[in-house]
Image 1 (cartoon, rainbow, N blue to C red):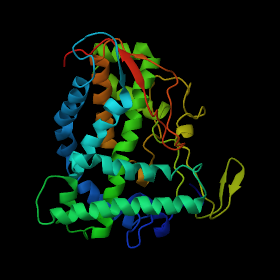
Image 2 (spheres, rainbow, N blue to C red):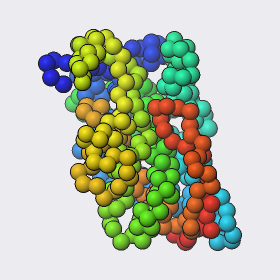
Image 3 (cartoon, rainbow, N blue to C red):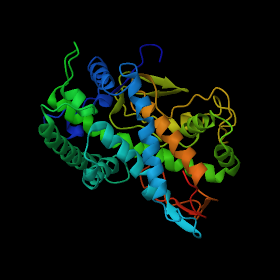
Length: 360
């Protein structure tokens, strides 16, 4: 922005909820934001660990293959129904983020409840601000206590997971405090699967509505098609529709002839920006062949999505394997039932009828 106009992710420990637990790194400004993000990145992927994400590719394919193998009808006997959400899109990224962080997969029922509570408090239709902040405080506190016990149990143990890396970080930079690890581990657990669930589900729904693209993906004649499909999905049907919590103007800002006063809360409607007809030709058309596909599906600037290097290949592998292996998939209901959250967009269930499953 010009003329010194700025906006900020406001520091509010009350909103984050747990006394003594600082806000996670997406809620704070530089230089502390930059320090924590660098420390997280050192143990996550590029540029510090360029081989980590690439090294996960066989595991991603293994998890996806196993989940599809468990679909009913894998023996090709008759028409069956699967729920793409419950049977595939949810367990896939949950398993991935658990392995990445070093979280026991058997704890999933516990953190599913806590994660769901955090997501619910982002919905402005579920009560007043004070009530939502109180419920968020409780949900974040529960996640913080869960990770505190998990970290205590692994102190002194060496592992290749991200949490072990944060505990044993030996860089020249000031290490993350115990409280900072708790706060940011809770963020990564929630964000690392909730958004990918929606992206995979939105992707399958969109492909079933555009069978010509699904057929092209199934044929496998275009090596870069899966990547282009995912980028177009991030523009056309992103899992995160808008960002609102804790963002306020630091100066008066004039946009399109309207002045937003200093101190005003601001919602960033990413999905709308990615369909701006003044910037994107024919924005309401799903077209993975469009050129110069710039979108806001992962945000932008210093808060660009930390998990994007993992979310992209997760979704590419998931949609490619579903296209290759499901025999004659078709929607049972369109539109499907959606989650209540206005910020995170995705079906709560996506029932698909198939004629069986092709062999891997």
